Structures are given as C-alpha cells and as structure tokens.
Amino acid sequence: MARFIQSHNCTECKCRNSIFDALSNDELELINNNRYEVSFKAGEIMFKQGTPSPHFLCLTTGMAKLYIEGHGKNLILSLVKPIEYIFGPGTYVDNRHHYSASAVEDSTACLVDVNIFKQIIRSNPNFADEFIRSISLMTIFNFDQFISLTQKQMNGRIADALFYLSEKIYGSNPFELTISRQDLADISGMSKESAIRILKEFKDEGILSANGNVLHILNPQQLKKISETG
Amino acid sequence: MARFIQSHNCTECKCRNSIFDALSNDELELINNNRYEVSFKAGEIMFKQGTPSPHFLCLTTGMAKLYIEGHGKNLILSLVKPIEYIFGPGTYVDNRHHYSASAVEDSTACLVDVNIFKQIIRSNPNFADEFIRSISLMTIFNFDQFISLTQKQMNGRIADALFYLSEKIYGSNPFELTISRQDLADISGMSKESAIRILKEFKDEGILSANGNVLHILNPQQLKKISETG
DNA sequence: ATCAATCGTTGATATATATCAATGAATAAG
DNA sequence: CTTATTCATTGATATATATCAACGATTGAT
Image (cartoon, rainbow over all chains, first blue to last red):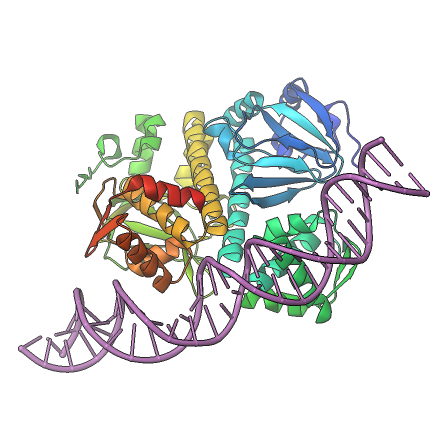
C-alpha cells in the first residue's frame, strides 16, 4: 500500500486531507505551528470515549477504528484510513469524545489543536462550508448504517460490511482483511460466531472465497441482492 | 399545551429558535423576507426522503416525526416539537432529503430559503458555531439511539423510548401519547406487536400505567434499571 | 346511526440470533 | 523451540423476536 510521505510543513504536505485545500498559506502555517505527529502500534488506543477532546486528528499511515463502547459490546462506527481525519461531535458540545479510537494497524497521525481549527472555521467561510459538508457526509453514512443494522438481518448486514470493506476501505477486490472477525462482527452488530457462520455460508454458496484473511467477492451481483433483500 | 403566537416579523417572533439569537436585525430581516408559513394536517407528509431540499423548516405548532424509509419498515429518527427546526444533512451534500417528515399532530411551520440560511452561516461566525453545535448535538443523540437499537433488547429499547417521550418530547409524566403504537415501534426498532407486549409487561409489573393513551411511568428507578441492563 | 376501515390487543407459532462449549490454528512470550 | 494466549471455527442449545391469525375497539365516512 502506498505510504504518504509526511512533510515537515503543512503547506507542502502530501498527506493533507482535501478539506484543507480551502486554506490560505497563512492558515496552513498557523496549523503547522500547532500540530504534532504521533505513532501508534496496532491495538493501541488513540483516544477513549468520555475523555477530553483537545485535538483534531488526521491519520497519515495505517488504519484506525472508531467505536462506541456500549453494554459489553462495541459498535464500530467506521474504519479510518489515510488521509482521513477524525473529529468528533463533542468538540462543539462538551469537549469530550463520544466514541473511542484505536489503531487496527501500526499507524501515524497528525494532531492539531482543536481551538486553532475552530478559529479557522470562524474566519474562513469556504473552510466552514467544507467542514459542514464533511460532517454531513458522515451523518448520511450513519443513516445508512442505521438502516442496515436495525432493519436487515445478518446476511444483509455482512453483505453491507463486505462492500464497505472492499469499496470504501481497502479499495480492491480481492482484499486482505486487516481487522479481526470480532471487528467484522462489531461493524455488523452481531456476535463473532454469527459473523463467521455467515462468511462460511457465503463461501459455501460460491459468493465469496476466503484464503486466510484474503477475501474475494466472487459474485458481487448476488451479494448486492442479499444486501438489498435484507 | 401552550401555543406560540407567531409574529409577522422575525425580529419580534416569539416562536424563534434560540439558534437565531446570534443574528443581527438585518439578518433576521433577510430571513423574514425569504420565508413563508405552511400548515399541515395530522398525517400529512411535510417532505419526502429523496426529494429536493430547498428549505430550512422550523416547526411552530404541532408535532412532526422524522423517519427513514427503510425496507418495508420505517425508522423514526426523532420527534420534533415547537420550536425546533428541521435541517437535514443533504443540504450541504446533494440537496436531497435523507429522511421523510410528516405531521403527527396538526402543525404549522415556517420555511426559510436554504440559500439564505447558508449565506448567513458564511457571514456570521457566531451563527455558524451555533449551527455546528446543533448538528453535533443531533449526532450525539443519534449515537445514543444507535447503541440502544443495536445493543439492547426490546425491554431496554422501550424503556429508552418512554423516557424520551416523557422527558424530551412531552416534558411531563404522566403524558398523553399523540403517536401511534406503530410509531412507538418505529422509534424502538421492533414490530408493533412486540412494542404492545412490552408495554403490557411493564403494566403488569407496576412500572407503567396506561389509561387509553395517557401513560404514566410509575416506577422510573426500575425503568431506568431496565434501560441500563438492556 | 351504520358500515367500513384502521388501530390496538392477544395468542400460537416460526425463525433469527445469541450463548455456551469444545477444539484447532495462529501468534506472542519466555 | 516450547508454552501460553489469543483468535477462528464448528456444533448444540436456549432465547429473543417476528410473523401470522383472529378479534375487539375505535374512528371516519356515508
């Protein structure tokens, strides 16, 4: 997988999310002076639900999962890959994280002081528009998840998760799964055992092949149908 | 229930959501010149998922439900009461509604041209901050729903719905339910029959009394425990 | 007032899904 | 290399929940 080379200056950074294209050089410089880089080993927690939320985080390498810690179980809201950013709703409400984030692969990230970020939103309307647009996109994505998890049964939910992984996360088919079966279950809102059983069922029906952690959607049409019929 | 008297001028309007407090008189005047009032009978659709979304809507009297039309079933995202507003995530993405809205009681609403609204967000940072804050609050609310619907079983979900209705919507206990059992089921993500059965169970256990559509939470502590143990 | 249509309620049954338990496979630590 | 620990898999079972069917109660229309 391509590794983005991180610059020491935001103005020339190649791992910069497109939301920052709306910024002037002065604003980028301001961010540059108020950021630092961190690295996480696979499995390490980046931040924990309920703790203060002083940073905007942009993932530069690796992969992270965002998950709500519920009652014994976790619900994975999304996987984050380079060069996406993480910015929770608590920033404008109570300065707390409303979900946890942890690295599912070895990762590096850029942290930006959240007050700088909010300041630029106030002073640069184009940036504000882009920002509102990006959180709107997340809301729409959440709605789709909502319907999948509350109205489809397990086959349909696993189908949705497989498309999400193939199309949105790994961007390929076949793809190598870097998350655990438990994570797949936490994405689909079911027990790990059930998730495994559905995968097996798809394999038996020739819809999917699985070689270790390399999954291949062999029959996307049929998988799509399963997703739609719920 | 108190009826807000609607003024013919936004600057003096008593049914104005507090988000507009950040606006100058000129900006209020701008909105005033680009709005109109509509009334809906109970059951009427205000707007439909998938259709263009040219207006910001503020409910002035009555009650509405926002719901995603899924696969045969609906999922109610929230109930809206005066003087809350409805502003979907599609406005900044594809100009489409991503959920439907319909009146559950006879209602009136104020519609404001969405471009005026976006224009003021660009020019007034305090208003922008308030707006981002308000959509962040909705996101956090959605997260709670998410956990309730995907990780709790039916008793816990109905308990959550009852607290939502009593505390957030009707603001009283006892309260008169103006939504149908089907709506209650659509809030809790279950079949109508199941919702009714849980209500009956709560009645049999003395947690709840139901006199027609007047519900009374008799034992909030126990209901809270049911909500927490899922 | 009467009829039709919807809404609420209940019971019986089928089904989806979680849980429990056991075992093998992979991985990390000594 | 060996052992301990986690992770993946499978089967058997229990449980939660939906569906189907029937019927009474309410509401709206003629």
